[in-house]
Length: 542
Image (cartoon, rainbow, N blue to C red; front, side):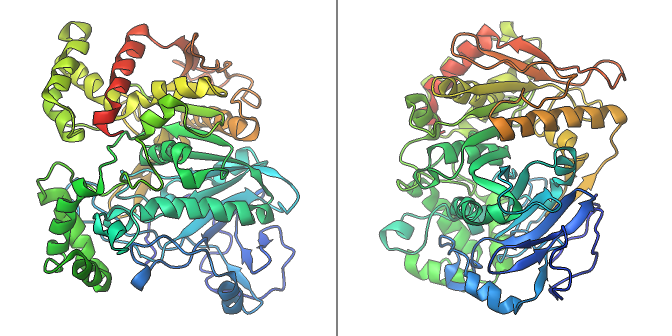
C-alpha cells in the first residue's frame, strides 16, 4: 500500500500510475534503460526523481527468505508493451517492524525491491556522473527511503546521480536458523543480499541515468552505516563501489545461526508454525500470511527473553567469515576512500547501569570484560553518571566505529572523520540520527514507514547546504574539500599520526555567510578508550 505523509516532492505528475503514452519520449524526465522507459517527477527544473524502479524479482512465495533473483528485464519489457512507465509515486516500502516504542509494525509489502533514483534533468548515458547509493537506517527493523528524499541534494549539485535502496527488513529480511544452510531451507542475510543485488543493478543500469558505474559511493546511517561497514568486508560486495560514507555505525553483534535458533523457534511458534522439524516450520512460514509474520516479529521484540532478540545480519560464513571490526583492523576490507563519523552524544543503550546495558547489547562479554569497562570509564572522568553511561555504552554501540574504521582506512587510502555536533530543535544533546533531521528537510521518523517533515530555519538550510556540499564533493572526488562551500573550513584528512577530524555545527550567530564547523583533534582519551573497545570486538561480535 502507499503510505500518506507530508513530503516535499513538488510532484509534476501527481496521480500518474502504470503506463503512459510514449508521445514525449525525449522529455528531460524520461529515461530509457533499453528494456523499458520510465517517466519521473520533475521535482525542480533541474531535478528528476524516478520512484519505485525495480532492481530484482519480487521475493514472494517460495522466494521468501531466499536471495533476490536478478530482475527479469524481459518481463518488465513485456508488461510495459512499448509504453513509458510512470515512476512518479513512491512504491510500497518493505514490511516494517516495530520501532520499539510500543507500536505494532506490519505496514508495507514484500514486493518492495526497488530503488528511488534522483538525477539531473536531461542526464543521459555518457555523462559519467558520480553516483551515491544510499542505504537507510532503522536497526534493520524499519525504515522507508521516502522519508529521506534527495531532490534538494540534486538541485544543489546537479552533477551526481543518487539511488536510495529498499531492502527486506526484520524477520522478512533476516530470519535465521542453522538448517537454512545445512538443509538448504533458505538464505541467511536475505536483506543484505538485497543490497548487494541493488548495487549489482546499479553497475548494470545506472549509466542510463547519466551515472558512472565505476564511480559509486555507498552511504548509510545507523543500520545503513553498519551496512556500509559490512559491504567493506563482504565477499560478494567486491568491485561494486569505489567510496564509502558510514554515519553512526550500528555496531550490533553478528550472532551465529545457532545463537539465533531459539529466537527462530519462538518466532515460528508465534506465527502458528511451531510444530515439527525446521523444514516443516519453514514450509509453514512460507505459506503464512504476512500479518501473522508481522505479529510474530513484534512479539519477538516485546516478549522474547533470550540474549539474542532481534533480526539483523548474522555470521553466515559466506558473506562474512570474520567479524567486521576484526577484518577491518587486519586490513581485510575494500581499499576505498572513507568518511566515517558519529554524533556527539549518541548511545543505543537504555537504562543507567553500564554493565547491564553492555551485557544486553553484547551478550558474549564476560564478567571480566565488564569489570574492565568500569575501570576504563571511571566516574572521575565524567561530569555526571548520565554522561558516564552515555559514553561508556555509546562508544561501543556506535561512536568507536569512527576510530576503528577511520584508523584502518587511513592506512590504506584517504580517510575523513567527523563529530556531528548540532542538536535538533534546541535539544540538550546531539542524539543518534540528529544529522538526518538536518540533511533531509527536518525529517522525524514515525511508526510504520511514516515521517513528519518539521520546519527548518534559514540557518538550518544554510548548514544543510554545507553538509550536502561536503558529502557530494566526496562522492565526486573522494575528498570532501574539493567542492565544499567557500565559507566552509577545510576538513582535515584523518591519519594514523594526526587523527584530526571536523566538528560539524552551525555558527553561534544567524550570519548565513559563515560556518560554525571547525577542525579539531581527536581527544587522546577517546582514542585510548576506542582502542580498548576495539580489543573487545571478538566478544562483542562486531
